[in-house]
Image 1 (spheres, rainbow, N blue to C red):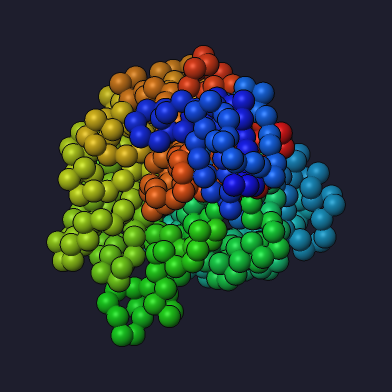
Image 2: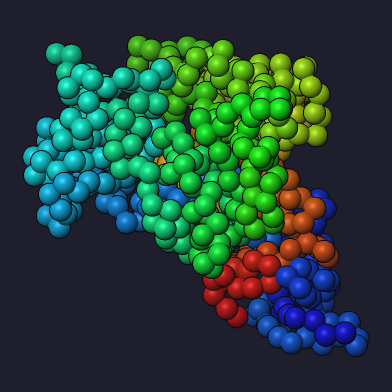
Length: 542
């Protein structure tokens, strides 16, 4: 028997079964799938391979997944001003001025990643106007839930002129004199973003290609795009066409699942609930590109203090707010469930989490779907009672452990020391029998490298070294399974990927060290030597 590829001299962590799985030294790969796991690395008698690759003792694991990212948005940020490392507002204004010097007179100057806590405040529209020479400017906060705009942009949007209609769930920040500062929050962000949208499909496809190359270098073989086609996350109403174009042009190196936001959906004649034309819903597509859950925003973020909390923020005099009318959000969850969709509810504050769980409970009472994998994105603040409800309802949290490192100190300041142990929980969910898939929310907040996400699950240390929720730490093998087994499961792919086993896709990563055995503080720096999807290298070769 002749096969396509024989990998040998490897330390294979199959993750098949419990823990790290069976120990093996090689893999036989054929037709894009694992044909056999080779205990000693040798092919069975009578087998030969078109390609034989020695791994030099390197560690081989299943391909990494990211259950919540924004791929098109991240790809666009790679061509924008990177504000993430800036420490002062003067640095921001200087960077805007430098970019504006090469821009056309009416061209938008765009940046992303600023942190108002680090900067000591948010960029002001008048200062941005001076820096950009009167050009329109839009700068995205690192949370993705806030942006700052220049005078020219505010005027075009009707915010300065007073003609703009601020939608429910959004806010235009005013100064003490009642004038706009330039900062726009949550559902009001499209007032600025829509001045640049919709982006051309070809431009979005090119951005996807830029992001995909970075993802491959980091070992990602599958990602879920959490919010396309509308809302402040969407790039264009034709965003799925951009993904299709990127795939057709060979730019898409990962398997991708995409979530339309609820604003892109509507009632479809002849059916129950909400959906897309032709009755498309979760699962439509193939193993390279398909529709995922419907996404519904319940609240904002902790870093911007816009998450809906049951008690006021420790450093503010308010408790955040919902993105929309609670009854409408509830109805959308129920309607999507009735129409056959899986639902992903964005809920960070504990008040929003309870509201989302209430909606899921109502939906299941009307039409039981015991096998559906509904999910709550972020689940940033969850009580013990909340975890019990997750388990009882079969709802899965999709948190971002790396947030603990990047903005952990800010999140603790937001909720206070008394609620710090409730932040982005992990071990407590596992003890309740609830899976916890790994995700990044890239480009929001964190850089998104999956191994840094894994390290954060194990260490739970903020950038200042603070240990946040010590009882929520997990061991390295559990963290690796979150990146692989659990990300495949939440996407509904547990029978075809997530482990290295016969019949599963040959999606794998070759690592420079065993991430389950190194010092946990080193996990995030382990080299990704090579990445494979469907038996083909997408990064590196051996």
